[in-house]
Length: 395
Image (cartoon, rainbow, N blue to C red):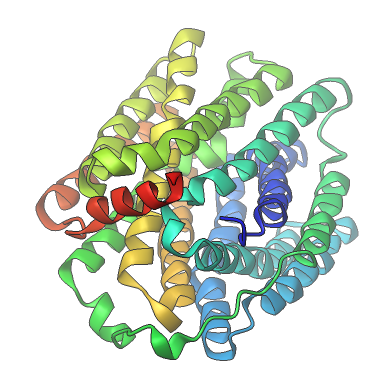
């Protein structure tokens, strides 16, 4: 892996997910601090998810047709920072909806392309992807925990300034990411429509959408839920960090799991344990021990699940279709699923209560589990290929 720009790719993930470590746990608290209710917060958070339906596919198409993924990453990262500056000029619902839609359109564009770029650099060592991606988790932990301490003493009003700095950092780090030029003509690939109409691919994308939708109450209201039950901002930050620490541990051993278990079995396991996670968080919030176990299960509900789906996409979408494959995964799961989850959780949280929201998440997970069991199959040669490549790597 001497030719892989490990630290430059890792640095981008570090800062990108550092911004997510500021946005995901605390932006809903910031909106709550501005006086918005749960349903309005859910709607505003959904705007950032809706852009994921469109942005990754637009930028994915451009990247695959121009071959300039990194140039587009730099351009979109700069525009994300520029558009985010709008939060300093107004706090009305309409204004924030416009600003959040604008900056997230460009913010969401970068990640699928850096994923495709990373996998292209890794080449036959794609199962080592998690060793680079874990630096994103480390960035999330550092920022999430640090802000928990800061907001405990000074409140969340400084969050926009911190996020603006982090978004600028993403653009700076993108300047150091090298382009990987490959000859797509030497890589055979089917037309896009033939791939996406395969039953396994359709089922996979639907499961990804459902899995992310089940996270709606967690990503939108977890911090508010804990705050309402007497947990301090410092403790909230530490609980978020614990989840991501467990995610890092999953990334560290993921290449070994992929050598011994099929993608299908790992996906099914992640869905089962995710439903248990929502049960613990939704119904045992007063028990710190239950919350600790729930956050440890983030290792599976995100770390294992995401690594598995990335491998599925990388295997199904090859050559020029890599960028659009990652874009479809991002838009349908984090975009469509995220928006659906935010809207459903916003409505149920406000009108029916948190436990109903988490019960719905459990049901969604079990539905995704049934689809995975019936329709999803692993690529036949996946584990044998990884064992072969790993053997070469060790020599």
